[in-house]
Amino acid sequence: MKSGFVNIFGRPNAGKSTLLNALIGEKMAIVSPKVQTTRHRIKAFLNKPGEYQIIFSDTPGIIDPRYKLHEKMMGSVKSALEDADLALLIVDANENLEEVDAIFSSLHLKVPCIVVLNKIDEAANGKIALAETFFAEKPYCKQLVKISALQKVHLNKLLEAIIKLLPEGSSFYSEDDLSDLPTKFFVGEIIREKIYELFGDEIPYHTAVMVNEFKEKESLVKIQADIIVNRETQKAIIIGDRGKMIKQIGMNARADIEAFIRQKVFLELFVKVRPKWRDNELQLKEYGYN
Image (cartoon, rainbow, N blue to C red; front, side, top):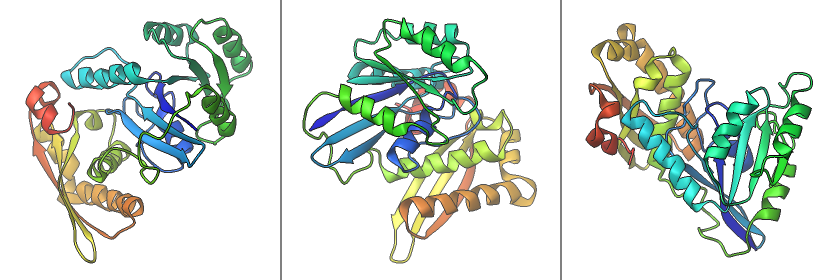
């Protein structure tokens, strides 16, 4: 029996969340073409009873913090560095390899690392061979595996490489569980994902979601959540003309929440203005950024 913590690191938009979802076979982390979508460390478990339990962690993309919120996000990365048995260093095949190497080297990982060369389906001519040669001589690179997380190409090869490097041990969590995070967390993330999908570049980064009520009734689950923004102008944009946008967020989120929890949902959304919440320690704690 093999078991251990396999933590995924990389720059924003390298495909960490897409990879986590593809490996688990469930949507555990929200995805968006926009950078810095992931704000928390998200653990998800892949179990094969009697053979292995892999505790994957998706982490926020590595950035230079500009707000307290960013500092909390990088704190999640630090905690993932500390308990990893194995690290997946994911890199977009089209990225600047020198910059990526600088980030990977700065992590000072003391555990085996697999460099995961992602988006090979989009890689320009010669880029894959160049990346293979480049990372082969790096001291942190125990092995390199080429994949496309989005197209689910070579995921079995990656899984085999992971299992080979995992320590022997018994399960850390129940084999029936998919994560150690509550359902409420995933509900909030689904609502946040819809904001990333429906709005331009600025709004999603000024937004947090707080799920206040999650009540299971006989025929449905009643959920009430607040969408937190920085300014009144942002509140007006989220609500939209005659409530058009907030209705759209609700409709899109409800469909995904129902698919996730496999129950009918009544979803109620409110928009609250909390100026400078991204730099407010108390408010960040209240919204789950510990």
